[in-house]
Image (cartoon, rainbow, N blue to C red):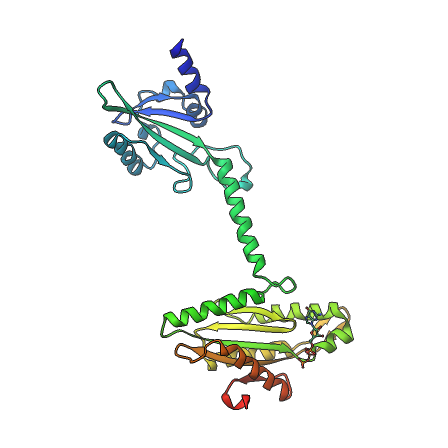
Amino acid sequence: MQQRLCDFIVNEVGVGIFSLDQEHEILLWNRFMAQHSGISAEQAIGANLFELFPELPQKWLSKKIESVFVLKNFAFTSWEQRPYLFKFPHNRPITGGMDFMQQNTTFMPVRNESGEVDAVTVNLFDVTDNAIAQNLLQEAMGKLEEYSNRDGLTGIYNRRYLDARFTQELERMSRYQAAFFTVILFDLDRFKQVNDNYGHLAGDEVLRVVASRVLTTLRDTDVFGRYGGEEFMLLLPQTDLAGAEIAAERIRVILCDQPVQFGESKIKISASLGLSECHSGAIEPPKVIEEADMALYFSKQNGRNLVTVYSPEISS
Ligand SMILES: Nc1nc2c(ncn2[C@@H]2O[C@H](COP(=O)(O)OP(=O)(O)OP(=O)(O)O)[C@@H](O)[C@H]2O)c(=O)[nH]1
């Protein structure tokens, strides 16, 4: 009766169970293992595990098994470190992003009457659902993080992200002597008139077009975002004033070169730009934004549609 109960439990429990001797010969192979591997207990018992499943990570797994024989302790693996041992298919939707059943395993030493370990029993748990849920959660959190850094209208970075990146750049500078970056601030010219003449929706469209035009001129490492209303900021790591001035001039031209099409209307636009460089050793690095803003103001004061590089003279 007891044997019958044990057999029943081993086969009906929804967990993979198999046992091995020290030569990796299979001693026990329950129904879960048979169903998922397609290899029956009759075929498995007496066979060598690694001959039956050549795709198993033999070096790693035999070491793991050996450690249980020698140390006489339990051992574990988790899907987070090693997603699966056996390439068992699963019946979850492909959208979960998992190719095979995700598995946690427990390796248990089986002792004989004299206390020696003469077999290792492995329990294999199907944790595919947990793994899918965890991956979806991580994906959602990643998207949330991404959304929280983006401007809703233009899709480029927002002020929050720009501020964080600015702080990061300052930290990078305090760590590396050779680090420097340039800030470009620009503001659309007479944007109030765009809203007044063509309506707020047209104004919004102009902001979207500005963002997408500027994006086409940037390097991968440049950080571009909307700083507020119709003001935009670029952080250009490892770019000196000469290089940044070229980039700023390119932006100025790409914005005023062509009007923005909104319905039947062609809306003429331009921007005023200001830039300033920050390098390690600068006395007051956070002042770089203030300086770029002063340079931008200088562009506005001097006719708009202009690029101005900050110098102490313009602030006086
Ligand atoms: N459509 C739209 N307008 C915005 C948005 N954010 C700010 N604005 C408008 O931008 C305009 C900014 O106007 P001002 O600061 O007077 O500057 P300006 O008309 O661009 O003139 P200058 O900067 O001096 O060349 C205001 O009319 C704001 O309402 C937005 O998200 N959408």
